[in-house]
Length: 249
Image 1: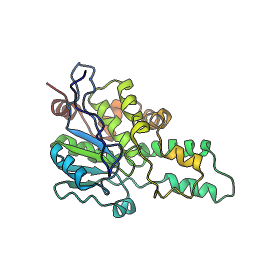
Image 2: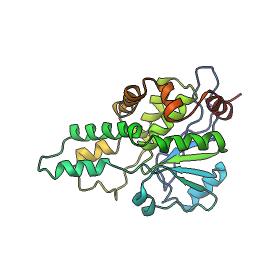
Image 3: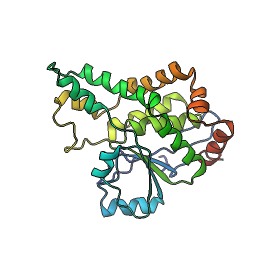
Image 4: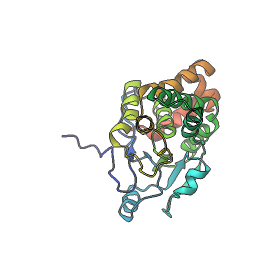
């Protein structure tokens, strides 16, 4: 039986709260446990949940939610300093715009809009992800990265982190797709006016979503290494520092 820490922490007030630790990089070192966590928003934590986070020593949160999302569910943990890195949500608005044309929405529409949103993480929101990496290089763990659902903006950010640490693609995909196991859809979500089959797409992740972001990186930057150096301004020395901090020695 493995003696590794639990990857998923079953919090009552937050779903999809997971540890990025334990994945083995190409050089054989593993990502350190209990340093980087990923989650949905932290606005509905119970007292028991807060005690869990205190026990983990979490002191920083990096929040990709937009302005209205943050105001609707504010993190109330005094010990956690929240760094806002806003990536405004666009998916529901885009789907409502299509619905307003009078054409019924389908799962194909939802999938297309989701992939477009991931492309725009690269084309319109790279500064937010650049700011995250600046914190990761200069800050100290333990920390948590989140958005509203902890699956899309957070999923792309965590995939970038694991790539920067040289974790193989198959393990990055495995971590990304764990959302489909652990995310609990919020019954009060703003997408409740959309068809059920569309809401199901919005509440899940697919490999094609993440692939769309990395295809945009290839189109706009040529290679992922170029994106790290030019888009995220993460040079060789910063990559080495990340690996020293977040990979086991």
